[in-house]
Image (cartoon, rainbow, N blue to C red; front, top):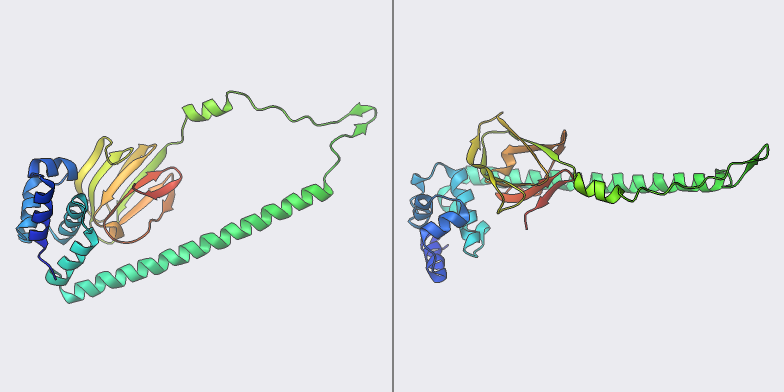
Length: 244
């Protein structure tokens, strides 16, 4: 057991940081950071915000954010709720493992199918050069246009992203265009259950304090992401990737 507030304050002082600097770096209001250091958690909106702010503040100071969240859970969250959180994380981990196994099986089946098609085409296809009634039917592959690669570069595929709150409210600490330093599209927003937000971008950076309550659909296809802890990740047309 350790003191949450005093350890955060000592780490801040060692780095010589003040609250205006921290507010700009973490995108969390200075009065909330002060409340974390004073362990006056009743001044914050709720447990979901506290855990998200704790993780973000600790990691910004170079500390282990999960350690601070666990310490808060052990001291301030009711035992029944802690058990519920652990059970939810276990269930999410099991679902993730099933998804990974399904993806592996699908990949292996796809490889086997492609291999079979190649063998059939190789053994049963017509010779490349035939003559029918004195007319050559030799097939000459058409060269690809030289501008093909450039055109693909000029027209990157956009991601149409829908964020929907499920299983309760979903906390969006920040949504940015491109990455963690991109233009802010949404900040400090708590979606009510059933509420949705839509974005169309090449890259979308999302920092959420309640990923278990957030459903993400990209170009009409639901996508999943690992773990149930507060986290930041990047969404593109190809799927979800951890934030660098």
